[in-house]
Amino acid sequence: MTLERLLRPILHFAYPNVCVVCQSLLTRNETYVCAACQNDFDAFLLPNESAEKMMATLEAHFPKQTVISDAVALYNFHKQGKLQALIHAFKYEGLSRLALEQGRRLGEAILREKRGARFDFIAPMPLHPIRKIERGYNQAERLAKGVSEVIGTPVRELVRRARYAKTQTSFDLAGRLQNVKNAFECDEALNGESILLIDDVFTTGSTMMECAKTLKSAGAGRITIATLAVAAS
Ligand SMILES: [Zn+2]
Image (cartoon, rainbow, N blue to C red; front, side, top):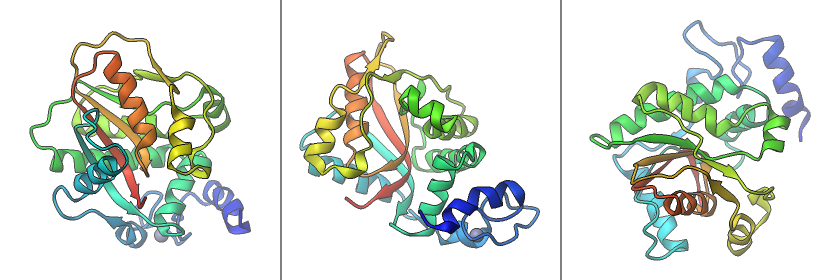
């Protein structure tokens, strides 16, 4: 972790009117992220572009899967890019309102991209209770709340972590699958409800896939996944 990274949250709390990414002063219309950085994020611009990329990734890793029906995301994720600084800020630096605000942007994208789609519940990807205590909040739940404010579908924490899975970043695909196997539980009896499952970053989709399987076993109907970003995998 660089000194700059360590200092960033302190800077933000001391100077809440600076951009969490580039530390430049924010104008009155900007919160957390300046317009220049926001415009620099690699947003999906073409209709269905994000859905095609995510569904193709799922198909590559889980041929003929039928658990996840549709997908949507806001940005392409690049390592060391500005978006990484933003995600780091809302994940590890306690800026839960930043996640809420980006969730609203994701909600706008869902309204644009999934016209006519009907969702019964928005389900955030669960964080293990220990991590939630460490972090103070579940960033996926904050994103989900932002989405809910825009699309009007209620958030329901349908799934929980059954055990403490290690962070996925250190594993290859086979390792990722093993690491998340049976990692989730759903205590609710569902009856064909359409679920919008929310997380921050989509990489191979293995964690969301495992979570979606748990929802299906509990009786869920159509499952759509929505994430802030899609990392190349
Ligand atoms: Zn900036």
